[in-house]
Image 1 (cartoon, rainbow over the protein chains, first blue to last red):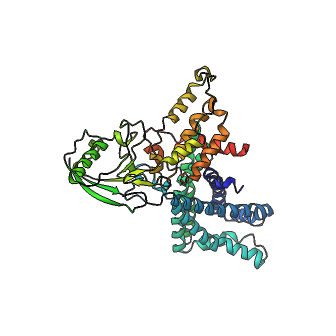
Image 2: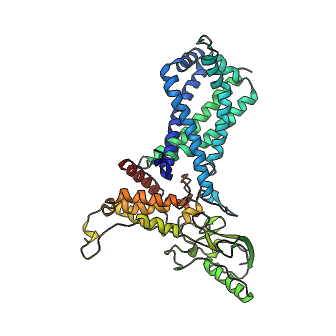
Image 3: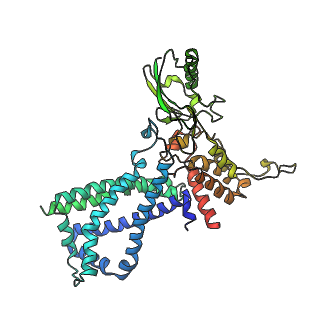
Length: 220
Length: 248
């Protein structure tokens, strides 16, 4: 596998697969979060299931963490090679004439998302792990909604989340459709698929923004 | 037309280069870009200065020799043309034009605007051909029926002139469009299928060894390619390479 991942194409293939996996995870994460807008009880019920189910905690969660780390590490490896491939920069480079800003700056939108993940883990994942596995509190199936809402009482945190979701949209706008090209999937359905990926890249982050603003405004 | 040219001057491969300003006057809109540089060089000769070195050969968009980054774009602002086909009518009186060599670590500057593009030759030599015994017993290719659509796609891929604009345009200096065009022109035809696995592995290996960057799918290469080589070829090469990796 190490030998396979030495090639340019294989690395992009692996990058695309990990990206597609994270896109699927985003859809699942959004679906659960969106429930919090409609029903406190159902949200608590689903969150409790996700937080206590053995399959989710012991199998899916490690795979997800591996996917996230792999995507970022491979992103840095690819970026390092790309920067080294042009040792002397152009004095004038008209990138906007032939490509979108988003497609040329995936590393920056990715870095913002990485920083956001640090905040997100600090807000939810680390407290959750400490609560369950270190302090070993008795399980309270009704706590999830209140924990979520409490985080969005801060306007600064809400703004940070909203800005991060904008960068997530930018990252997905190029990355989602681009991943299909990297795995070699380009046929008569490619145009329709591209439309779907662009819509997904806008709708899902907008949905996350809506959820954050909903809980902030709801608690004013 | 009166112009200010900002041109990359570099004495040799190891010297440190810099942008130098050259005012030029009397440029006609019907001149080609290379003719404009010829006029500048004549003026430099009259002054006893070193002329500006740039690649050119056929001057009709076929050989792929001319390789200038003009105002930040390979082959200049017009699309589907090589530098030799760019006319000065694309610029306005008083314009400042930046002229640089194609930049990539795999394309080192030899002098001024001339870069060494033998990396492309080595990729081609890796397996950019069909191994056929040509000692008097070859079968006429036209006796093998090929679907029109595939023949057209193979022909379109084969129109790549190897100028290097794809590398120059790419923010990562990636050679995926060039390599994929060469892989595709054979992969689409029955004659090329026989060695398709070995070919794609050898050409991609050579491409990586030359130090080109990764493909970020920005599409800049396709936009700037003077022959309109499609990104479809990159997707095909990705498929071919991944299938070849599974086969081993």
